[in-house]
Length: 507
Image 1 (cartoon, helix red, strand yellow):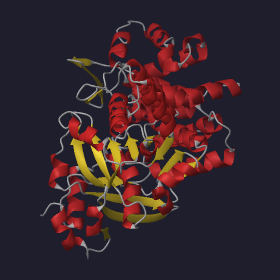
Image 2: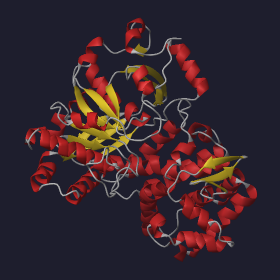
Image 3: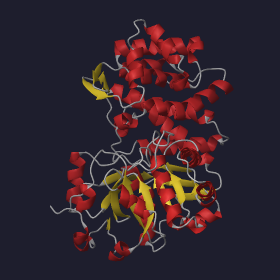
Image 4: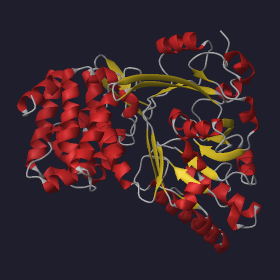
């Protein structure tokens, strides 16, 4: 079977159900610099740009910078940076399928070995947009030297690029860029801007550059929402290859639902013309409502359910949602505890409507979204996604959120390392080990050495770096978590979940 690459596109143009790029797209100039090669950016941001190019609206391609050592660039090189987006799922109960060969990416560069080429892009006057997705831990202030090849952090790399651009164009205001981080953190654009400015001061860059940086570049907060689990498993990959008639090592699956909300005014709308081709790309002065609905009801539910689902033996989201116990738990969690406690003014009807749409998306059998992937950086996600909801619920209600507390217990149990291999810690469930991909893995390894369960729980609940406050002061929370942990240990996760639901009014 042939592989996807530019020369065989002509053979695919008449294939039904497959959108193939026109040859003219390959002549378009590079206009976007993107940090991150992951499936998510390719399935959302790059999807919008590809769609706009097909309609002759944006007319620009993307240069992608690969910042990590994981994976390699050879797949992109072999396929002339082409890849297939397979959209699967249903909207309002209607099943829809769509296959798109994306030509949005022109080149993929390695930050580690091709940093000079990345800096050369700063001299390109057509580059006007920077996009990133470096995960929640990517936008952090670390001591960095922008003259390293390359700088260590993403903000350091971005600053080095911006300084090179400032030098190349003599500080001309016209050559500032629009910077749109898509990392799932609050005020991602403003946080990135503050870190870049701090690094500029620490690196002793001149006042004129800092003035240009602040006044002629736009750091936009943004919110992204599309489930893009990435490359399907081997069985599904073979089915898709047979259906498409070619092999694609970069193929990704994604749901139909898509939203990219960017905070900006009319000037930003003018600089991002690809918003014209899709209602799912929203540019508004305030995107907080979009952010809160998605962050709390989709991401928050994912986070609270991830450890529990894996402990129950479910590998993917759709598999878990086929189980009546887990589906009931998640629906009650979202509708009865998260929706009424979103820390932002939102009409109850709007929140419940979003709940229903999210639950429909979770049931999508085509998206094999793995719980182990969702559980990465578990502790950071608990802090940013879940705790603000817990605090609001506690403040406005006379009771504690039982389902959230149950999720806390599952999180603590999931974070129990039973094996250490170098710097890696492994948990154990359902007959196999799993890697705990979390910055606090070592911390939990130490805490689980405490002999008495009550003392261990108290020690963990005291930690404000996880919970924002000392939760050990609440006897109700402490006793409930101890009880849930004892049950998880003795009965297993599914029976513990069944017991929990029987004890609540939702059984």
